[in-house]
Image (cartoon, rainbow over all chains, first blue to last red; front, side, top):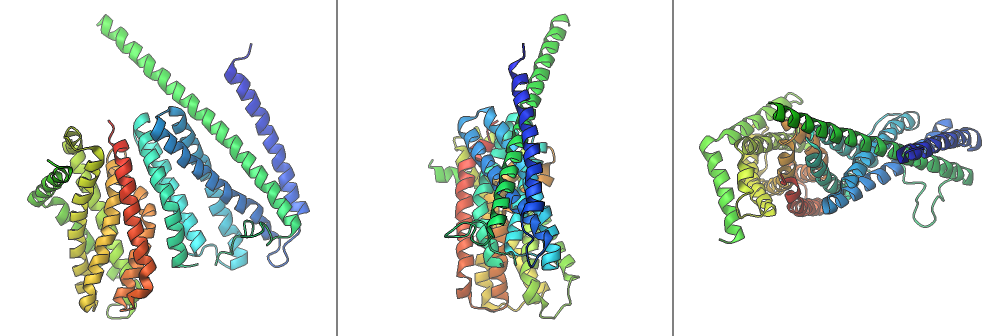
Length: 244
Length: 225
């Protein structure tokens, strides 16, 4: 008889394989099907990684905000587990965004980095969640750090639009968004490119989901082990007390 | 006693304590002076450079000195068990946030005004009467820093890394405030028309109001032990 956790582990295992296969297809579409951009050349294929990573980052950080709010309202550990996992995986995608960006920019703009509006606000956002992960790591015991992180993520999320506008007024080289243009979405791109983008975006979202589930499972296991350790310590203390 | 009286009682107690030791005030002002000294090596004195970088120099010294001050004030509180004592008082925890923010504001306003005067003298900035609007910008800026600083300094001194945590949390979040303050300050130093800076003044106001409200709403969740 298999336990429940083993069963879900098996399901997750199949999901990991599925996402891996999906990524092989996505990479084939990106490199073989998508047309080469006329001006920028092959480097433009970076878009299929860079832009979905940026969208996924927002999904991750949105989840952190939602879970933090729920945690402060309900005080249920599962919301804090979700916030922990989403913050880490969101930051993985933020880091992909912030490293693929300069690699794409160097051949196209002639520079790895420029303090333009989008770059600056993405950088600041990344730093906020690096701070969040540091607070997670050094914030103290479980319930306390959960409250601190929830407060930080709520204040941080409220700051995102303010950062966005302040930095935009301050200066604005990053091309305007090509995918979600006002009016008709995706009009800035060739249809083949849009299709490739869709595949890459789906693969990135699937990767996010699988990483988030794995991280969530890890977090729960860690907390179970910590709780078991604490119980064992209590039992030992009781035995020592009754013997002594 | 009304809530306001209670809040002011706590503020009075905190400020009296600081006036007796002058520990945080003196270290903060000296630190700001040192930042001004270090930046001075970056450019030639007596050039037009000051119009370009002066605002950045002023706000860097205000920001770093403010971080130092917040840590000092809240760490004293932590070590003396001050906040834990106040949590037993009839003051609600949200009102405790207001008391601590007002204390921090008074403190930062005093320290930053001294920093501003030192900056004007040491960098030979000819401001004239524009020093008064600049002082108002400094006050609006430190109000925003105090609103966020109270929350994050309270958190930071309760973590394992203590004072190292505060700048990591505060500085990225305070970026809009810093940009707005630097932009308005540059305009004042270069004697540009303030009418063109209206959006920055509005941003400064929005920042102060939003983070005072969020600090007020979330402080009880921090002080829950």
